[in-house]
Length: 83
Image 1 (cartoon, helix red, strand yellow):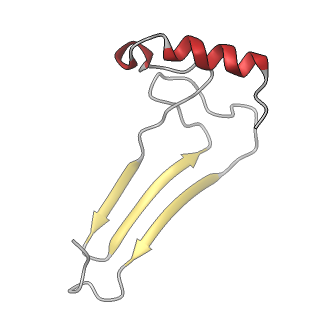
Image 2 (image 1 turned 45 degrees about the horizontal axis):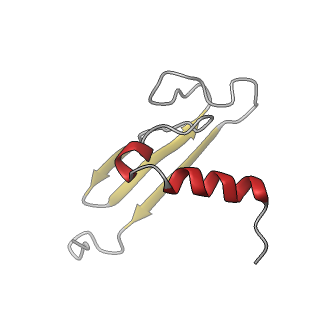
């Protein structure tokens, strides 16, 4: 597989530093801790909605007409819930 010189340089630079020094924030990457509501019926996660902020307080897509993205799971029988 051909690797671009830029990628090889980046990879070599990373390999020369210990893992503990490489962990941390990545420029341009935003992190949001999800809110999860759970009960005996299942759960609901609010993944992203208009006006949300990341964990650093920066707005996600401030000028985009995005409403909301969610995830949910409903158990078939509340008594037979996976552990």
